[in-house]
Image 1: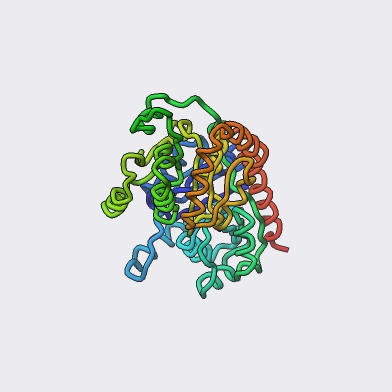
Image 2: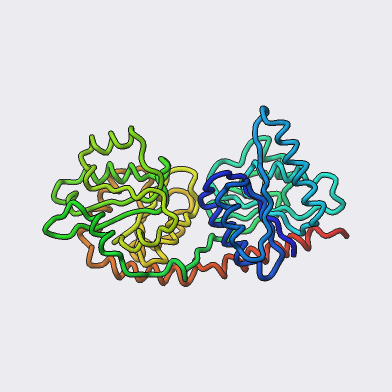
Length: 377
């Protein structure tokens, strides 16, 4: 098949980029894979590094003030589609979806269009209804929560399948911790080594990391002093730093910044956390930490609980409930001797269910189904 992946993010792209690079790498040996992404984006850059993958510098201008740019973008994409005659176009957000719908007009044979629903944002409104009716053949939900959301939306008229996000469990494999890194994040030193908990899920506010900091601050000093926190992602702004200072835990919270490779950080952890309360669905970060043999504390938001076997390879707490998070932190300290066994269980869970092969094969099968369903006659 000839496959085109589109994504509108002009910057890092987060999980969208991880998702599409995994698919492009996994499918390029079986099919002709093209990626249409904004120039300078992480997706564009990383796709160019994949052997056999074709990349188009494709902007996705948005807004009424950008009508001339949108017209040029549509003309470019339309010409590319006419030249390459794709079997499937895989869109990943409303901006690229809209442009693809405009660009396929006039083609003698319209490719099948599949949308992945990556986030938990509502799928209501006239825009979603229009895209579902005129420009979507199939929808991939990345977890059961999202599948239920899709089936309650205008996209229920399309073919809908759940394909859980996969992670590279060979790349995200257990590895020894860098003792220097770990020692730095365990500062300030105490007589008994503290537990190091952390997250590679980023520092957007909805990721819930401040809820964890507030829960940490609420613990009695004897418990609080036995924990340290490290976060990968954008550095906190001045307001967040003031809040952490006011809570009295600034010395126990470390920020690693944006990392090209999160594995050295994850390797230093005793346990991970993803406490999102908005946007999130299944979380690549959670699955990556589990693959690296770390038990993970998650909120009960959206699809996050679908990753965890409660008490076996992680813990589930109500989203934004600082009391429940604080109780979970205290339990981690009390049960620290059990954390390695929970980490082994997390890795076993990842090996059984989170692998890329399963994810890629299921996505490919859905492409074939859609292609057959949209063939003329």
